[in-house]
Image 1 (cartoon, helix red, strand yellow):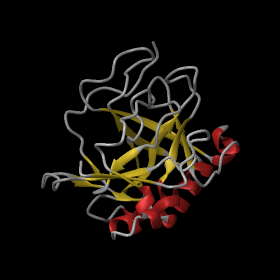
Image 2: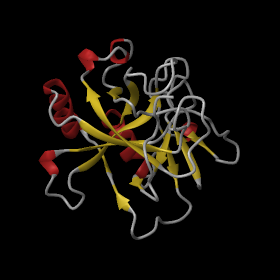
Image 3: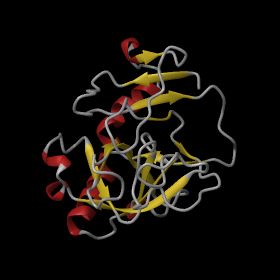
Amino acid sequence: MKQVYLYSGYDDRTLRADIALIELSADTPPQTRKIQPADTATQANLDAALVAQSNHAMLVSGWGRTSTGSAGATYLQKADVNGVADTSCYWTGNAASNQVICAASTPTATCKGDSGGPLVWVDPVYSGDADGGRRLVGIVSFGSSNGCATGVPDGFTEVATFKDWIDGCMAGSCPAASIENTKASSSGSGGGSANPASLFALMLTLVMVRVRKALCCND
C-alpha cells in the first residue's frame, strides 16, 4: 500500500461514513477482475429489489473468523447473503439509511476480521456489461454484539452514497486532512463490530484467490 485516504466525516461512535480508500503502490495483476463501485442508479435498482424481496442475493468476502470466537481465516472466504430493505432493518432505523445497507443469512454471515470486505450485487440492468453487471454496493462495517450469523442483519457502508468522494479521490482531489501515511496509521481489527474505518482498494478490485467455504458459521 502506498497511501490511505480516510473519509473526514467518519464517526467512530456511530460508525457513520465508515469508509476509506487504499492507494496501491503497484498495479494489480492483469487477471484481476475489476468491480465497479455502485452509483445512485444502481443503488436505486437495489433498493427496489430489496423492497420487493426479489433478486436480493449478494456475495460478501473477507478474511475474518469462520465462527464466533475462532481465529481468522487462512484463505479468503465468501458467503451468499440476502439484502434487507431499509424499512425492515433495525440498523437503518438508527442510522442514516442512505449510508447503510443491511444483509443477513444463516448459517453464514460476516464475522470479526471481515471489516472492509466487499459486498457485491449483480444489477440486472447492466448484465450485458463485461463484468456481468457486478457492482460493489457495500463494505463490511458492523454486526450484532451477540456474535456471528445470529440472524441479525449485518451493516455495510453504502458505497453509492460516497461515489462522488471516491471519484474525487481517484482524480487526485482528496482533502489533505483526510490523508494518512500508512506507516503512521494503525491497523484495526474488525468485522461485524465497532472498528476503525473500513478500507477497500483504490483500484476497486475484487480478487477471489483460493476462496473456500463460508465467512462465518454458527458454533
